[in-house]
Length: 523
Ligand SMILES: Cc1cc2nc3c(=O)[nH]c(=O)nc-3n(C[C@H](O)[C@H](O)[C@H](O)COP(=O)(O)OP(=O)(O)OC[C@H]3O[C@@H](n4cnc5c(N)ncnc54)[C@H](O)[C@@H]3O)c2cc1C
Image (cartoon, rainbow, N blue to C red):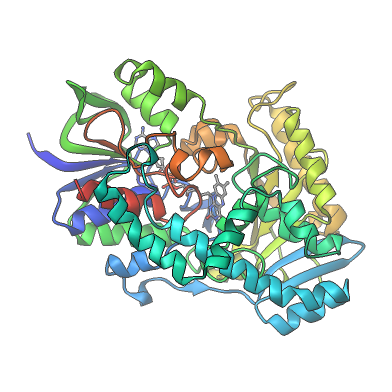
């Protein structure tokens, strides 16, 4: 029987990055994907007849593009879209505020609402950029094993330390000061206008089930600015073929380097012999042997479903069981017979369109989630992929993909299995949409909702957690996925993790896949 060098479980974008990097080194690699499509949460699928859009993630602005160069993906293989608007906040009563890629246009726009904020915004853009650059040094290197800092590890630390020092000692100190801050404190310190603060504060909600007053929000704002230029908001860039085009390009690179990819191949068990991984067993019984098993699934799924707690030891099991997996977002796709009625809709709505008029609005939405309720007045983050590429849908049709926050996986008084609960999250979102963008409702031809439970059953995200584990301060850096095991290794020899549940974390960054592959190759 053939024995692969590595079996990669899951063809999410991180699994594909890891597979491609291992295959590039001449390893025999097999990727096994449960679904019929690759890409996991970063896949493009036919949601409505003739409409192919991102099923979950839309924005590829966080992706580390140097990975593509490392893998030999030609720049022409992907068509990036950088719409003129980075984000538009709908403020009610027909008012809106747009942050444009053009800084002068942004300044004018903010000045209509608050002159002082407009003059302070360029400084904020620079600040966010320089803080994110320093943070990126930590995100793009493996975290040091603090409990066991050998001479070799100390030497490996030199490179990131030198890189960070080059970015300025003052910046490093400032970064350490702000990382734990709530987004509200960071923003109150700089701006006065509610509209601007609400808009910027939305980034602190990504990867967490907490509002803008929660500690660690500043970290999440900087984390989400560490990809392509953030323009004061967050790293944002789209792909003409939808985000799945990125996963397809990674898969093509993996195949070019010799990796095999099998879809419709669900791994049921990771085989462990004498404490070491020896391969996997598929649903249906087929066994595949390998020297290494690399899991792109979240830690809960990897350890408790595929390995089994008895192989791991009580202390490790306790740590994994304590990882906070708390999906709190539902995704609503709308098929529209035209753009929502807003002046300059084609340009204003081409980035992220937000319903987040104030920080208090976001806080109240988060309060509902805290008590296990769907937000009565949710925050909406809307992307219209057909504005990036009209051919994604038939002529005259648009698709709006909306993240609804909050829709907690754990509901106190209801169940996501009930049609009434699913209907409630849809009707709540449409009510708010109609309030802030009147007339949109009349354009809806069809809708498709993915609740946190659907994200779990369809995409394999435990508890619907979009980031394979909350991006709270206690679940980051050397504590991701759990303290003592931040270097992709596991208590099972030869079993590595490479998904978003590992450092640097969630989002379509490719970072975990790249760092895991490096760690494996370093032996
Ligand atoms: C609704 C939503 C919106 C988001 N929006 C954005 C966004 O706009 N921008 C952004 O940067 N991030 C976004 N994110 C987060 C981002 O999409 C994820 O963090 C990232 O895609 C996870 O990638 P991954 O490769 O680590 O894991 P996944 O994409 O989860 O991949 C894991 C793969 O493993 C497969 N699998 C599961 N079980 C098995 C098994 N037993 N056998 C074989 N295969 C298996 C799954 O099918 C999946 O393909 C969003 C997430 C969600 C859910």
